[in-house]
Length: 361
Image (cartoon, rainbow, N blue to C red; front, side):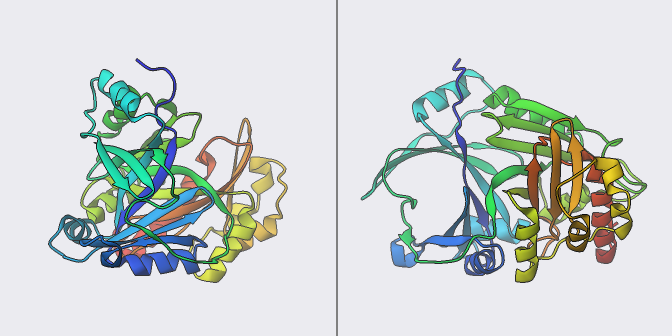
C-alpha cells in the first residue's frame, strides 16, 4: 500500500443551484471571486450551464440545469442550492485508484479519459455522505487552466483577501459520524486531528458532536458533525431537515487580514451572525494578548480563540441561500491550528437566535 499522499488538495467545489448566473454574480460582486470561465450550450455543453470562479486557491463551480427533470434539476428540487462535488487533484490516477482499492473500503468509479484541444484529463469519483461525491482529477496531460467545455471570461474583480479553503464541514445523521470518520481514515488514509463532544459544543438547548480528519499535511481538512440530544433542535438537525440528506454545511475561507476581509464583505452585503457585546468585555482575560484592536473586532462581530500554538480569529455568515443550509466562515490563523472550541457556545447561541426567528429551535 502506497505511503506517500495520493491526494494533493481540493481542486474545486461544484454547487448544483437553481440559477448558476445569479450565484456566480453574487460571488463576484459580494465575495470577491473572479469569474474565469463559462460552459453551456454556446460552448457545446447541451444539458447545463456552469460558471467557474476563483479567489486565491479557492475554486468554485456553480452549475444549473436546463431541464428540471434531469439529475441536476432533481438534485436542486430536493436539496435546494448545495454542494455536489468536492474534487481532489491527484498526480497519478493509476496509483490513486490502486491505493484506494487496496484498502478494500471504497470502489472508485471507472476511470474516464476526457480529450480536448488542450490535452486530456483522467477522472474518476468516489461517493461520500449523502449525494455528495469526490471527483478524482489527474491533470498531468492537460495544459489549460479551464476544464474541458469552458471558455475564458475576462473579469477584473478584485479579491477581498480570501487565500484558500481552510476546511470544509459536513453534516451527517445522528450516530453516523464515526462511520464517516472511519471511511476517510480507513478508506483514504486520512488522519484524525481532534474531536468534540456535546460537553464541548452545547448550550442549554442544543448540542452536536464533531470529529476532524485531515490529509496531506492539512491540505484537505474535513470536520464531520452529527446532532446530539438536547432540549431543542440542534442546528445540525435543522440542516438535515432542510437539505433532506447529509451534506456540506459550511466552508471556512482563510485570510491574512480578517478585519479587512470582513469589512469588505459586510460592505458588499454579506450578512454575518451577531455577537453579544458582553463577549468582548473580558476577551483578553480569556484568550490573552492579541494584536488586533478589540473595539474593531466588536464592531465587526469577530470571535477570538487560543490554543497551545497561538490564536485564531473567526466569523460565520448567515445562510448563503434561501434554505438554512450552507454558510461561510472567515478565519485568520495566528499560529492556532484548532477550530475555535472556546467560541462554540457563543456561536451556537447566535445560530439558535436565527433558528428561533425561523421557528425551528
